[in-house]
Amino acid sequence: MLVLSPVVILAVLAGVVACLMYGISVVRALGTGWRIVCALSGTRFDIEFSRTAVLVAIR
Image 1 (cartoon, rainbow, N blue to C red):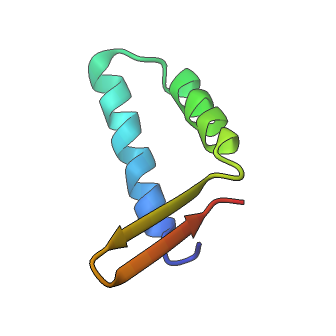
Image 2: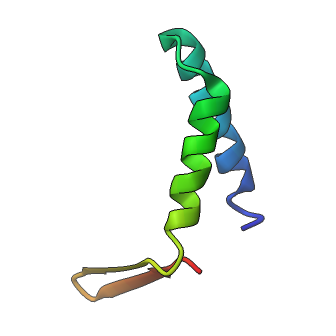
């Protein structure tokens, strides 16, 4: 998680800028995003390509 934290910070800042550009409430957008992230609990992504396989599990 520590490795991805700079990416998350940049994504949040880009989201805030986009909200301000399109006139969307920043607080409401962040709240909705947080609810979506919390709802992902227990989700698994299995990605297979050729001889490479990646499993991403969100707990």
